[in-house]
Each structure stands twice: as structure tokens, then as C-alpha cells.
Amino acid sequence: ENYKIKIEMSKICQITGKKAMIGNNVSHSKEKNKENLLILNLFNKKFYYVEQDCWISLSICANGLRIINKKGLDAALKDAVAKGYCDWKSIKVIG
Image (cartoon, rainbow, N blue to C red; front, side):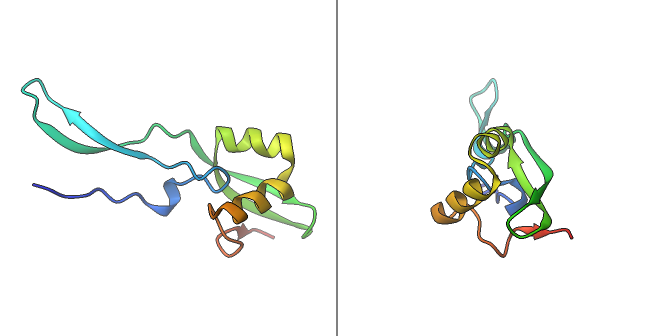
């Protein structure tokens, strides 16, 4: 069967744009089956967004967390929106 595995939106980092890869599971007889390789270290994290005076929730990977620590939350979000990894509507505001 020839089918394509969908990657859900929740499996994409909102800062770096990294997503789960699709690869082949190769058996001993060299038969190939498509599988979703969830190698991404993705988790949900809450941040206090000082510029808007609110809490936001982001789905980010470990590398995205390092970028936020290095550049700051506002600069990292502006870069991610400029590169098209997320948009302002997809950022969940908690309170």
C-alpha cells in the first residue's frame, strides 16, 4: 500500500520549525514500511510575555528553549513569525 503519514500540527516546534520526520522501517527481508520517526524532543511550556503582560503556552523543542534563553522571548517569537514557523494567532494565551 502506498500511503502518506500525516504530521499533526502539534508535532511542530513553534520557534525552530522542526517537525517529526517520516522514514522507512526496513525489515530483514528488505520490505519497507512508512513510519513516523518521533525523534523530536517536543514539549509544552508556559512563558510570561512581558510585552503583552500575559502568559502564553508554546509547543517547543529543546533547541527552541535554548534560542529563547539566548535571544529572549520577544525576539525569538518575532523571528519565528518572520520565518513562517508560527503566526500570532497560533500562540495560545493563557491569561
